[in-house]
Length: 291
Image (cartoon, rainbow, N blue to C red):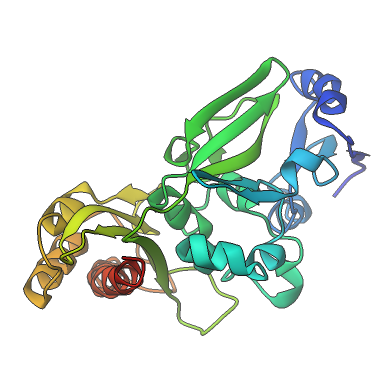
């Protein structure tokens, strides 16, 4: 790894000239660095500049409002996991983020970095999508907002320009009877990437009938898969075992998973169905507790 210039702007305004220069000088945004620094050591990424956004206040805090939850893109996973309020409001998002790496890595890993690393197996991504997350993207020409699912375009690639970074995430506050959950399967209990990950967001009415659902699968395709077919099966049902079995069956047929040392494509298809059934039940139980 060669010499790299390091910058740590203290504000969004201070970041603007650095972002403008990034159009000409190969640069990378440093949100946590848990993936980026490894890639630089391996020669996969060779930036001439690092722009660290962890000292910008808008990226490092979170706020839970009546209608909206705002989460800075550079908030460490450890801070997210230690928040009782985030556990209460967005348990699935917390579950995704708390699975990233070791205790030491948790002190650095961030939701913005997890998303922009654009790994098909990113644990935080399916949960943020299922929770209806929006990204506020800051750039040299101002800000724009897009859904989380529009960021990753292929493994290692995003829709962000060279002069942009994610400032924060915004999630709609869960309604009464609404909750999310995230599950993954790995060969080891911890410190491994997902063979398959599934997030669910379920809304129930007072009778316990599902009135809205969003199911998102990771690690079964180059980018996350929003399982619209599964969600449509759930709406209007009591989420009985027959419905869950059908949902799992449909989920098992989605995506184009690869075969690697963690599992075959056939195994991933099967696990996707199992996890889908389980995570829907967890999210539904939580939703029922909020009625």
